[in-house]
Image (cartoon, rainbow, N blue to C red; front, side):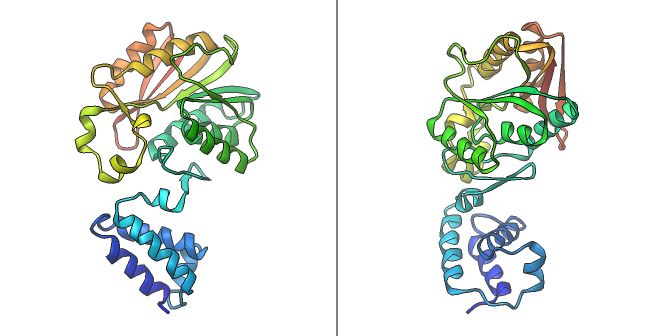
Length: 284
């Protein structure tokens, strides 16, 4: 039987064509932690411990999928997001660090407030409403999503954390009757915002595996979701309450102006950790 150290090296070497270093090393570490159910520290201290045959078989099956460029999150059916371990599969986008920044901004701006009512539009895995419900004092939290499969994933994640989020299965472009006008404190959305023309810049593991419905928007109407959600938000938010968008870095000023044109009194573009325009927040 191979040791943990030997197995880790085997994973790294086997997936380097699909995932070059240092990413291969990080993936090998994560795969071992998941399969062996050990922390990073335990793996480090037990390098000479032998890997059981059944565990080795699971690791080799995962390697085959990784060699086909499948993301590690889908292989493990797990994504880490804002302190949560969420279930993910090919029906939903893998939650991104930029979306964690969106959640963090909202949490910091609403800490200590009570009985918040929140709507997340294009909710996918449910990562945004689940993280907000976990970290804020909420009365009602809604997640709106058109995809049946995505909502099934969101429900799994909410059940894991014992959260009673109200999932709304509908197209955002249809009339929304489940939420009362002027009843919400926060509306969030990370809608599809990658242009079709940006596909050639994207990695194979994203293009081949993640749902295009949740990723891409037509080059001819890149702000279609923002227009609709801004109009919806102006009707559903209480006075003085906030709308928060994750955006394509190309369109920070355009989304800001669009929000102002929809009757919001203030709007601001917020940059992410890499200095890119990534969030637009606005007050009704």
